[in-house]
Amino acid sequence: MGLGLAQYSALSVAAATAVVYHAFATREYFFPATVYLATSKIAIAVMGNLGFAMSMCMYKTMVMVFLGSLRDLEQEMIRERLSSAVMESLLALTIFREEFGPFFIAMFGTLMFVKIMHWLVQDRVDYVEVTPNVSALQHVRLIALMCTLLAVDAAFLQYTITGTIDSGGQSVMLLFAFEYVIQGSNVVRYFLKYVMSMVDVRMEGSWETKGICVFYLELVTDLLHLFVYCVFFVLVFSNYGLPLHLVRDLYSTFRNFRKRVADFLRFRAVSARLSRLPDASAADLERSDGVCIICREEMAPGGAPGKRLPCGHVFHLHCLRSWLERQPNCPTCRGAVFRGAAPP
Image 1: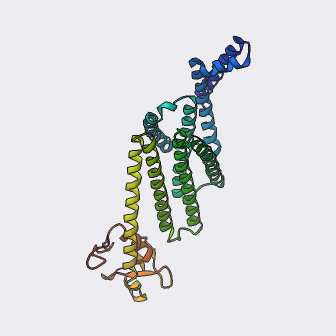
Image 2 (image 1 turned 135 degrees about the vertical axis):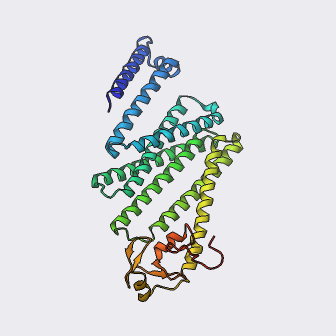
Image 3 (image 1 turned 135 degrees about the horizontal axis):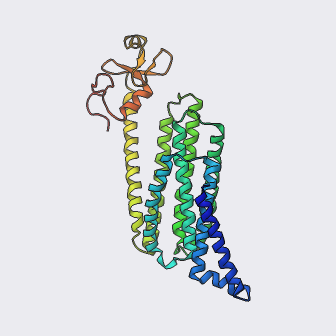
């Protein structure tokens, strides 16, 4: 923890202590003192500042315990995402402005804190996927953080859903319930991606269907998010009006889902056409020097299945499938792999 944060926290505690002392010293009974602390603008500001200082200390502690030190890229991504999230939340505030108060500020600050930790998990999982030497302690820390965040999401989701039901659906708790559904599904997605990466590492990179599994995971997650966004949009629109803060996220989620569906259809078309290509024989492997130029690994009879293209070139089946998902030409001669129309 830096010296600046330590000094700021100490001053915040001192200011809060002074305000509490003043409240009880100038009032004879407990109830008037608590009323003063809950209604005085100065007292609320000082207590809010104390809460912010404690949140910063908790953030530093959790990062140190679960992640160690943050990379420069992770810090930069946090700043970019945080500015966007704050702007969207301010737009949401225009809808729930009648319920703005200390409780809303506390819930909003907690949500921002939880979001930041989720962003750090996302970036760290992506980092672990491409880093060969990761210590066992780092794995344990990351798993513990994901489990902790999932428990926090579940607890706040139950609390906000209960509050939404008690208020008949017309409450700011609806906003927070929606946010914790999204955050909970995200941490489950990060955990499953992490598990898939560890399985692939265990298999020394030979898990050919890993990309397909990750693709299906992303597709299902996007579908869930699209459904949640639509439900929340309808509920807010019917009770409050047009939720402007949700339009961008709704459109972005729909665009991502549409792109993944198009990729899925392209994948199915490529797989169907690849199944009709002839298998590579021993003579084909010998003629091509037995090397797949996509992955630069040897192709031996009885090993990973290979396919021979109409132009005569031979490649691993999984390498060729991955290549053709991006472009319909032979990696060697650039000739058309499929006669007639290319796969969609």
